[in-house]
Image (cartoon, rainbow, N blue to C red; front, top):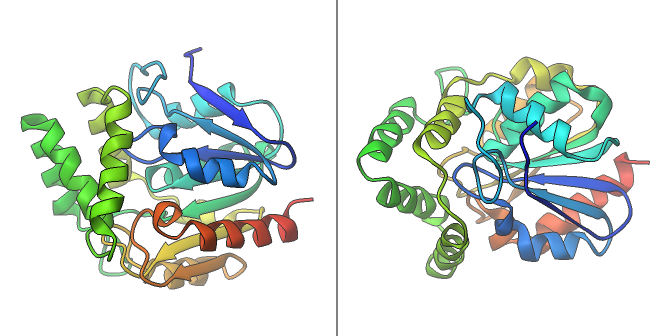
Length: 258
């Protein structure tokens, strides 16, 4: 079993925070501390990210298996941001006994768009994969700026993201390419439609990676899910609009997790 770096704060109902592509659990720091005033919060580095060991192959199933094996064996709320949302949806699909609720933060069960489904353009994702091989640092920087580009406090947020990503070593090519492949290929719409646990989806009106229209599409799939749209938020609402995100999660947790 590979070793995954994790830290747990606070007491109460258990929440596991799963970060996004190319990032690490340090990105949650301030947000996790606020959440830990009310809950037991575990922040974990995905395999090959931050201080966690690498996987031989970075696939969705292997990543989800590694997280479930590493985290304390109890029912938790799994909160995933971006790529992390894809991972937690897979955990809920294959390990429902470990999940009492799901929070999808700027997540999309089918990350790439089709004529019938809102999502990121496939060619943009493929261009990222190509550029990553040529110049990883510049590509990561471009990806970070995409996450906050439409926001008024763009420069401050970009500084926060850059500082966080520099804090720990950059994942290797295989891990980064594996993450992009998951975003390109994973289709968890059926898993979302058949999920037996409460699901909260948080989206930003200015998110350039996960279009806000996906909220309506998800509710059509699964009418019971709660979709909250945050005005003027981009792809990192827990950094740009932490109070709204915390308040929404708290209400959801109080109503759904006993």
